[in-house]
Structures are given as structure tokens and as C-alpha cells.
Image: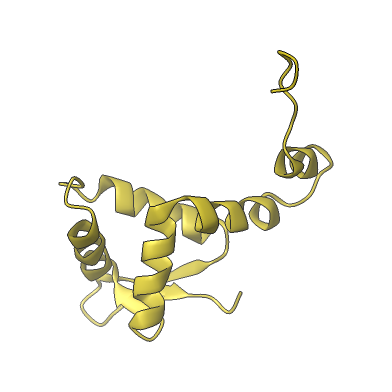
Length: 102
């Protein structure tokens, strides 16, 4: 806000100019939202792939106020939408989260 007027940030201007949403928002989310950083850290520390249920349990260990998997599951879908994570399934049909090459 400048002089009582809202002004877009650099990221906001980039979005208005048509830059891809994943290019603009991925760095912001990773830098400013702790859950995203923790999720990416846990995936990297595990060699790049984890069962989603195990990933959620690890994140809930970092932040016990998450008593359900709603928040980490939502973040995982955001990371997939941003192209940072992809899904597959293991032999049991459980969902796996895997870091992409980005």
C-alpha cells in the first residue's frame, strides 16, 4: 500500500503481464510458506519419493496442530499444480509423491 492505494507486487505485475502462474508463484510459496518448504525438504531427504501418508505423518510431526491430513494434502496438490511434485502409485495402490526435475 502506498499513500492509501494498493499497488501490485513484482509478482502481481508478472501475473498481470501474463507470466505463467507456476513460474511466478512456486518461488513465493517455497520461500514464504513453511509447509511447502518442509514438504520439499522431506521429499528431498527421502531420495525424492515418499508415500503420501508417510509424508503427511512427517509434516504433522513438524506441526502437531495439523490433526488431519487436510492441510498437507492441499499443499501436496498445490505443489503438483506448480509442477514441483508428481503422483504415482505403488504396488499396493498407495499414492506416492515424487519430486519432479524442476
